Length: 454
Ligand code: FCB
Image (cartoon, rainbow, N blue to C red; front, side):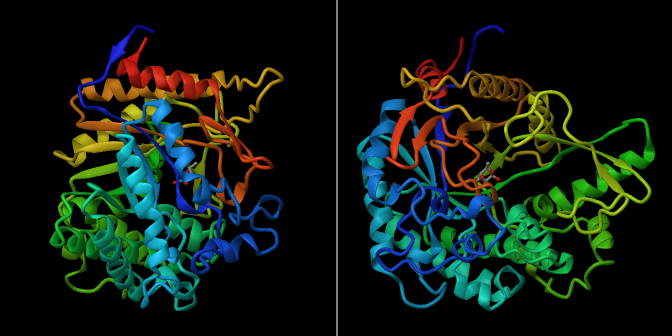
């Protein structure tokens, strides 16, 4: 491969999320979240791991920010834990929770790192779940209020406001196949959650805009889906259905102001759609300054009589997902960088004028420090290098791509996989909390310094 340079001002960052790194689960007035409950439910998370301590970032944030500065990060994407701000999801504000993000923001700014805030990365206050969680419309309304509370405190210093991270996961993994909190398995509930998450975004984006926020975004994790046999009409239709329930069910109301007719028709066999009220699509359709995209792996689907369907896609019976082919990461996720290019150019084509940001991309690999203390994670370097080249190709194809955030800054609590899967460019020893830059972190530092690849 030859050297490439990114446009001037291209944002280089790394990302994390509150429940995955903070720990301090019972400190300073934080209320319980659905992930505290779920991780304590036997059999839900690998080896019973929880986020109680995680990377202890709540106490070590200053050192962690110093490490980010050492890497030369231009931006840091983190999430705010709703249960730290409103322990019950609504009502009284816990000032000590806001104080933490205030300190973190100041620390970042002091080091010249741009804070990119995600308001919701899956840690819903348990009290709200007890009232229906994302299947209830009230949760969307509560979210808009919470968003304003955080903005009131940080809005003078934080420019970029991301409402939700991957509502696809919250809805389909949380309420569909139940592999994420709150662990509900009910396809109709998953679809109600999709709508209320879309609505939560719309209500919050509108409130944030009125309060003066200038850079508003949401982060989606599109399924880059292709028909297994591109010449087979049944496979093409299978891909259309999955693209509908996975992608267009979010993209279309957010960016075009309406749910696609074929998707509504498809899901009306599962739900009566009574959760969609007149005017909702207009509420969801708020101006977006930048759309965050998280990308890891492609999908290939085919029509197959009798296939049980993927449990995370309501109504996908008769559609088979091809198992990964070729090299995979430690998540068993197929590695195919060209798939990222297809995804970005497709969004650019179907939703013209949308500015994009890669808000997560990276790979799980198990390497730990060797005897000399080095972490030789060459495969992670290769993964990120190849995906950055795909981003650069997309830029050449005219895609308005503004930046790239590596997932993740450091090893952390990987949801149902617990601490078993390591996505960090920095290694974390969970017994000592020692951080060690992996070779990928040192390599990424050079990428940032050079604004490109060798
Ligand atoms: C994404 C999540 C993130 C992390 C990566 C591996 O779905 O947003 O928290 O778990 O996957």
